Length: 132
Image: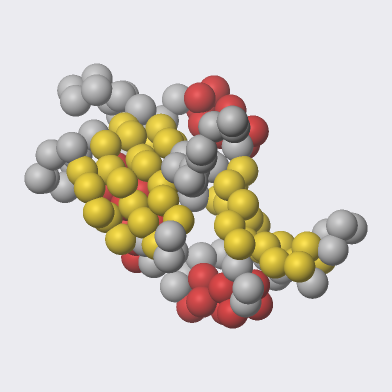
């Protein structure tokens, strides 16, 4: 019998938790549904939106975070892209622009997916896509 799998929840390592939570909640509409501590600068959080879950974890322990992000570490984030099903890619584009994000207009990929790419505060790529 195959393994019973009911979902996928990626974990992203982030430099500054409050900045990342503001991006995912205020810009993308996720809700913070769990966190490791009750303060604003907690180390781990679970975000949810419309059946999609995402976990954020601080890349550094309390008191160990450098003043600025490690550029080599952030550069490696470009290897990661999260693809979200998004029936209204054009609407997502308009909403993100209204919220002040600088994003290029959606394009249709050669394989027929209309796609809108965004980069989060930590350099992770996000793609909102739907069949064209």
